[in-house]
Image (cartoon, rainbow, N blue to C red):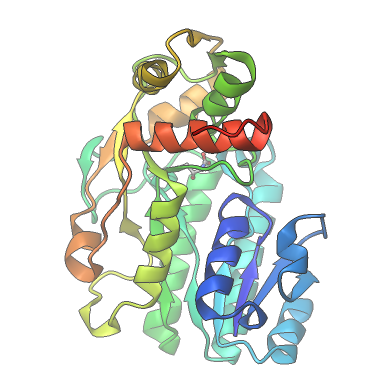
Length: 318
Ligand code: VAH
């Protein structure tokens, strides 16, 4: 039985559907802070859960006899920068509660880290798996602390903790909330709805990115990997591509020639983006559990625009 926190979020809403398809809907308990009209609420067990409530989480783990916890509930980088103390309490309080419940129930455990776990003094290109991590954002402090805490629970208690340093994730099902890489999601929505986009991230700002189907496969592949082959555990660099706003705009123009983009740079999120790497090295994930991304920028653009057209304009695109 798998318990997922943050199951209505950008990753959670698609990971819940994917794991229900693989392992059986009744074996995946979706939880989130509030119930919505999402199909996730009705396609299998759903419970409201505030991850800062340790007892409530412990009670759910017992109620459903959970053996795997996928902890996704967290505030993303821009929101965390606006509300740093709330971010510390939710991101770290929720994580330690989830780790304790996993330890008490001997669960396998997954929680994502991020390229946000790196800072300005980290090598920016081909960022190594093992390198300096002095992030200058509250989100980054949360992610580095989370990586270390999950390693600690593995070393100290033998808990089977696993995690990935995700790049910006691009998807069309549930919009991300409060991220810095969200520009690369918004651009597709605006392209379909307005034919144009105003970017809050400046031209020339490279960040690692990945299409959601590849991120979901990476989570399942890592969780099913032979533990004997894992040298790293909670922080595998994984990236499918690195681009800057002009490049994603050019990719969209190949499909929508009249698309235009201009800039209204947000200094806060621009500052966060500039503190992160340009392109990270995924070789440890490739070597230890066979990470492989299927989508590049143009194939992602093709799929995003087709799916969003169907979703937003109810156009049946052939
Ligand atoms: C964010 N989407 O922007 C998240 C992610 C690497 C970016 O951590 O905060």
